Length: 502
Image (cartoon, rainbow, N blue to C red):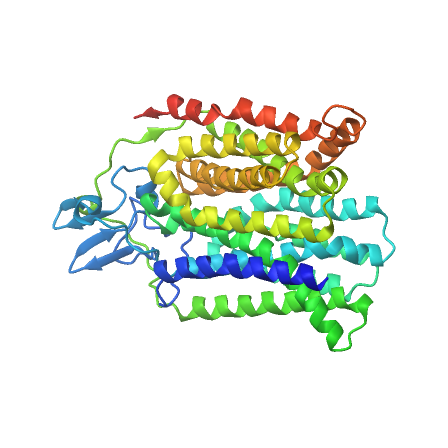
């Protein structure tokens, strides 16, 4: 137990240090400006003088437009309007401007909620088992969360269109805290399942945050913002198991009974989530942003470049891709947890170290993701991520010799991480407007949740069948998903070729 905790803690330090450095380089310690609603996002037809958009400014009657929706439809995403003339900052500024301070509270909210998910994923099965739950009941608790997230994520994102991203982000955190309190105070299996279902209802921080950053940032920084949201989410999942193990050990030293330690961990998570909620609320109320929303005069409107008309099947194609990539995640966690001990002799310590190291690489991949995107473009980056995941997921089932096996596992997880963020970036860029963009991002999250309900059943059955084989036993589910991933790898190129310029 002590060795496992030390390994997890070491991975957390290795992950958190470069991530904190990246944030230090990109964020300023300024007041959090209010996250705008769809009615005040600084888009083409909105006022710059009284805009809530944090990247809009007026200096002596001149409008500085940091992008907003104009950025998502314009090849000159960072426009300066001065005396009726339009200047492209891409030609006047060599370096990319830093991320605005409003990104930090968004990522804080995502990290707080996903930290709770990391704790639940690692601790909930053990907690339910201590309450004499059967394996089927544990699966039911997981499925209830995914079903609730699939159902309510689009609803919460729609509410954020009307009432603002900031309010809904804080509502999600509040719901997450209440869920942790229910689980920590419940002594019955039913109470725990209700708590997990409630957590699924409010598990919409990621799509709301994705919608927020794509509206706050100009198009040339949207991928960077999305990668920060993904890094915060994955960091929370990484830190969760380590935090659970460390807190359990600490509580035991203070005399808490073993059967109460897990409940105490959920209570501690609720306190942390509520503390994050208070910080976000204080920052929100301290912002001094005008509430007015008048329109630009015709002479002040930024010039538009030709708009891209997405292929009509783009969003459906991207949802298909996210189902396949989501299936690799199920294989890499649940099924691999059966495969590695059976055919590689892994113990719990080796599994935990493998999972934590892979998650750390996924966080680091999000830090370099914008550079990959600049070099390859969104479509080719997505193809690269899909193929990397396919090679990794198939290779780890075929090659069972170290260190090659572990390398292929890491390649699979890193490729899937890149593909996930590239998919979200394409969903955002291929949407026609703010409302459609937030809707599509919410449906993408629902699609992932639906895949988490079905994929474990299918892949576990395939694993059970393949274990009877004398040739490469246990490889069937990994090879099946790899084949599907290889089949869908040309789809990003198809999306690009089918898009038109109006």
